Image (cartoon, rainbow, N blue to C red; front, side):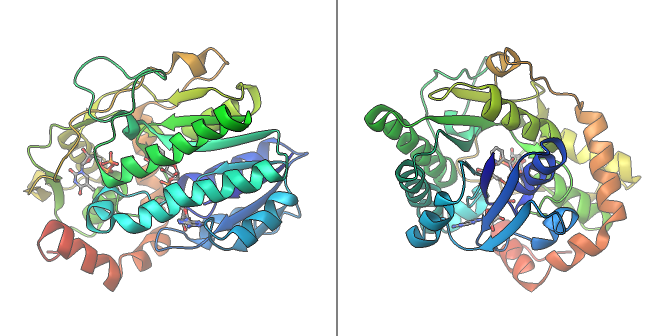
Length: 334
Ligand code: NAD
Ligand code: TYD
């Protein structure tokens, strides 16, 4: 297969590129990535010299670029997105341009090129706040943030292309993902890097909101399974099934780094904060996938990586980073 992997310079996309080239000798990969603040070409250093790999800098919302690349590939795996809820509260427009309109541009190009498969990488956040039980694929989409609404919008276009044109698309809905190469704005890399800098870990509200964390390798293996063994027209949840709250994330990071509890800092809650996400992933398990890495083991590997790769993340915590931080947390870094 010749894969067009959009957003392949980001956190999960770059892991998927590395996994695909390592495990599928006959495949080639073209990455299309705009290199926003969250994109980082260095994430692709491990595959840079592989003759089956090429990188194109560009926007998924640019029909000309996308049409050209779709014509040279067999499948699109769409990771490209604006991905941070807090930024979506500040500036929803770019989320709609990339996550909704960009998805349309990709669908249109893939359909014109006659692709036999398309995979849309989505999120458990489209189900909205889950009071009890676990979300299943047939549940209604009830997004509550501009980020999750944009991701749901992209998904609805995928559904429309399936129904209207018989377009063979698969959707995966992954849960909160963590691991190496994650830009330090999401809770886990933010807390790990802040702790390494002896800065406070800002916990929203009372720290009891729950997420179903999955290690990045497990998420990518799940996408690989859905792409190769899944049925076009189907949606697949990808979650590890655990429930971890913000206080527990902070506690785990501080314990692994041997830092004091006094670094925990309670801050103003996120507006509209979804209290709980939880996925039922038995449908994908039925295709032979299962998560391999426990939260404790994944956190140990993640923390060890951020300790060993400070030259990767320290330059990312620059002036623009702290400017957003000050606006978002309404306080200066301490
Ligand atoms: P990320 O922010 O690390 O990476 C996104 C990548 O997309 C970056 O490389 C960025 O440069 C690129 N990009 C953004 N806009 C683009 C555009 N218009 N054209 C081309 N490239 C563009 O995000 P991530 O955490 O790796 O998430 C990847 C995908 O997985 C997203 O679709 C996200 O919604 C989804 N997802 C993420 C999580 C999570 O916990 N991080 C969980 C479930 C699903
Ligand atoms: P986040 O990593 O932003 O992912 P999402 O909101 O997309 O699920 O947040 C995960 C959880 O951690 C969520 O309940 C909000 C909380 N959180 C904090 O307590 N402090 C922080 O600084 C951040 C970024 C998140």
